[in-house]
Image (tube, rainbow, N blue to C red; front, side, top):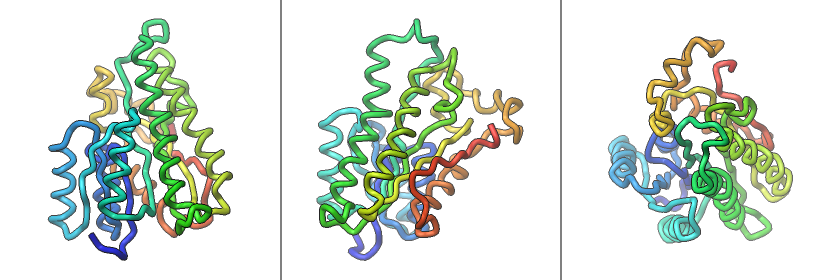
Length: 251
């Protein structure tokens, strides 16, 4: 790996928005750590594509919803790169569309473990490596939220919406906490994006079916969200912190 190029960790980087972020970041000169929880083949496919196009990437296994997984991610990151300059908290899960009174405790615990606590813990580890207070050189964190944080997810997944609401509060608070330590913290708030995350909800065609309810009359693409994330990570956003950017087609 190159000693000079900046290092970006993307959680949930093997598919959807995360994979688009990995590919775009690599094309802009980042060395990319493509994190995945279980689908090694998908992660390696992203890595192979990046390398084939002259970029630098490695796949790193680890479930952000567990302490063992978190330890594995950052141990591998340190051993491979010895630095961290940017992080995208993209790993997240949904579930079947259910009302609150149908949701199990096990689902609630897993949802918050991955979407909220996992992102907070990853950011915590990033701060320990990036902050000038800890001898770091600064960096940028982007958290992936959702329009569900604003809309609420009624009748679909209020638990998912609640995790994203937590992430937005966390984004604002952490941004203020580390602003003087060389770290910027922002979030993107995607709307209906045409990725395979909808399969988990039992509605694989949800993005296309909801097109008429979106002001722009179409779902967004993973690449469109990735471009917004890369802007926030980049020096072009050097005076932007604590911001939540809608990427929702006006929804």
